Image (spheres, rainbow, N blue to C red):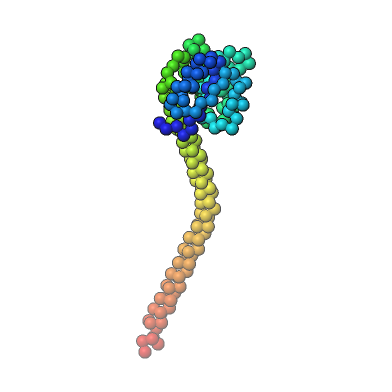
Length: 196
């Protein structure tokens, strides 16, 4: 899959892991922004268009973990795909983040190709979500149009009814006139003066 935006923020307090992930992603043609603490993030991502955030759950930081950082970033960056990296001991929190915030998660250790595959699935899911939202809007617009048409038909029907009644009255009058004219002709034809 060709990613429309290949910029990834990676936050991990372990310099060795940060370097390994960064090198692997750069080798796969991603632009990587790295940070060791949540405090570094605002400055590093300023004026950057980020598509993905790969965040360690346990950042060795008392004030904020990876999930809290992910929530903040998601509030600022629309459609950001957040992946929480975690060990088995924090899997419960990663699952909660997945359910509550639609974050994805990876259990350490993992391979770079697993991360890229997860990004591909996440982008596909995001596209489906957008398509679903678009379809919902279209359905909502169609419902409004149907309601407007129904209201219009309610206004038109009484007019149609009076028009059809008026047309029937005209038709009946014409028939009566024709009948009167025919009767008159018949009387004139049958009269003695007409025979002479």
